[in-house]
Image (cartoon, rainbow, N blue to C red):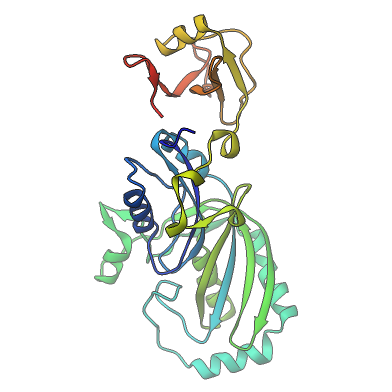
Length: 306
C-alpha cells in the first residue's frame, strides 16, 4: 500500500487550533506536507479532512462543500466573539435567563429559528481570523482599530432545534461553506434582544463525508489513510502505454474523454490503475480539450510522485 499520499478523517477536539492539530499529526507521522479542507475555531470540535502528500492538490474542492453543525447556545451573556473564547460583555444574566425560561418555549424557538432559512447574506464576525492588510482582523479590532464588516453570501439549507434546557438550547444546521455559526447566534441574540453566545460547536459533516468516519488525531496512523477511490472518485479514462507516454510529456487526448463537468476526471495508468493525472474542463472556449490540474507522474524519474 502506498502511504505517502492520502486523506485522513480526523475528529478535532476543542481547545486546539486546526493548524496546531495539523502540525502535530504531520510531525508525529513524519509527513512532508499536509493541508486542510476548512478550519474550525479553537473551541470547536468535529470533522476535519486532512489531505497529505500530493493529495493536497484536492484541498480547494472540499473547502466549497456544505457543512452540518451541532451548536449549543448558552443564554445569559454575550461575548465579543460570539463564542466561549471571547470577552464577556456586561449584562444582567439572571434577568436574561428568567426571560428565556418564561418566553422561549421549544415551540417558539422552532418558529423563531426557522426564520434564518431566508437569510441569504451574513456579515463576517469582526473577531475573526480574516486578514486586513496582512493582519488578523481580531487583533486589529481588539487593539481599537475600526474595520469594515465584510458581507458574504450564504445559504442555510435546514435548521432544527435538538434540545432546550434551563440555560439555553441546541440546534443542528446545514449551511453553505463559509457560513459562521457563531455569527448566526450573535445576530439572533440582537434580533431577540436576548444575551446569549455559542458555547460549543461540533462539525458533523463536510459534503457527504461524516464525523463517524473520523479518528482522534492522536490515534491516526498512516494505515488509516484513505485514497482517491474512497474520498474523491471521479470519472476516469484508462490509458494504454502510448497514451501514457504522451500525457506525461504534456500531450493531450482528444477522444473518449469522460463526462467530468463538475470537478473533472482522472487519467489512469492502464498497468497500475493509479492516477496519472487529474484534469478539468475549461469554463471558457479553448483550443485545448482540458486542463491538467495535477500530473502525478515524474517523467524525469519514471515513477509516481506519491
